[in-house]
Image 1 (cartoon, helix red, strand yellow):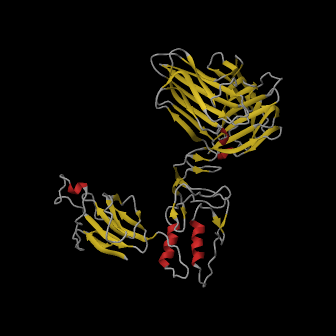
Image 2: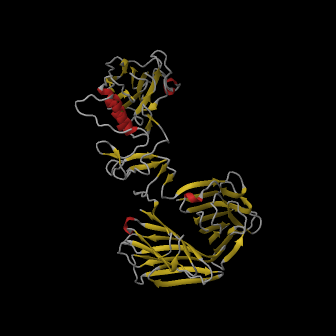
Image 3: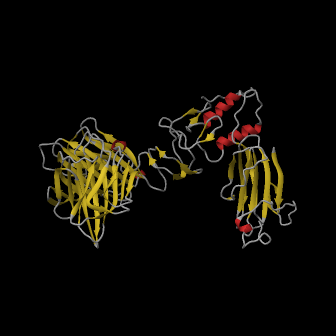
Length: 365
Length: 232
């Protein structure tokens, strides 16, 4: 076990401490015969005129079938890359991986017992202070066996496995990494504060407004709709649209819930002149659209919605429109007088077309 | 599995050592404390102000409060009346937020005027300018009161009145507390009788907001619901 077949071309030092550049090649290393890169073999840079500034290669056999490897590397102006080549038996290898930047990625997991490792120093851009060194190589996790002596190194590795670096969700006897299964804290046992620079990939923050659904038209349509909502999942909802409407003659933009066309709606809107309102109708009129054959009217709607099952369901919002060079706006309010219905869908429609790219978003808290 | 304390100068069972690792690292990571690493609630942090995690990858975050340089509106409290009352009083420290956003659904028996006050201040230091309309009548409404009137009377004495309002309020002392509100009144079934758009000012730039009152000229009925968000 351990490192064998070390090849240090223009490098000095040890892989487990530090390898630094050595233009005298005192370790008598050579460029591996099977080492090739696109640039190295290209017509522009031939073998004779373009070689890596330095290269390390070594073989390693671990005590288990998987190994964690991390290193320290530095290059002030250039690049250091690494490659691995893994094997189950130390004889038949899978082939070298592609070169990966060893300055930004400084750890990897080897999934087989035997592996070869290379560090390649950039052919052109390098400085005298460039270095690389493996600072940790060990098993991923050792499950202890009764009546067997535990090697101190195994104990240390186990602590490193769970305590060092990024804290990852783990499971099973070997504490392997998992994704999307386990939680940090629980509703009963909560962490107090979380100090973190970035939240990544989070689609829901409890208690805050989150985008819960979005529809973007990929083809012209007379309507745009969001479905599969459960309004009881949210304290209140916020509606946002930016839709492009084209109708032949003056008409209106409408909205209905759950496909309901009963006379269960009332609405009132105001655009700076006499308010318009009606009650006991089959739909909500969001705004009036000027008919045109020359193009689309963008319509932006922002609305606060209160839509829980046991309540009358309300919208208070603003509508802004641009017809050619004219801008208009109106305030819209509406009620859907159904106090025993859970809202599941919202549909906005017109007597014409909505253009590709029209967006309908629903946010919820 | 529970955590087992391994005694000095004794032979440790391999199973105990395994279990201890599993207790710490297996499945959901829960905050633990004490010599036997019992689960705790709300006592420990992930990271600290000096030592922060870099990225948190999660599909969902359940949290009562989010602070930091990037501002997020998060819920402060929800009040749902199960019995009639005259006033909903919400205790809050306005200086820990820059803005409040309140969503209100109010049930009343007949006529209603929905009002919002701060700190039980009964002086006439609230200035309001609103536009409202009843049916097709339009009116400007300018007044000075001991409250912000986010929804006014609709002259209705025969049926229940529901009011839905949304108000955004500057909350932090040192700046005068301006607010913007919108409301509707539903007087019966599918009819919206009045809508109101307005702004208001609490002419006090120094006093910390410690409470917000929601009340009306009529009793607030069971079923009334107030949701308060804060941006910090």
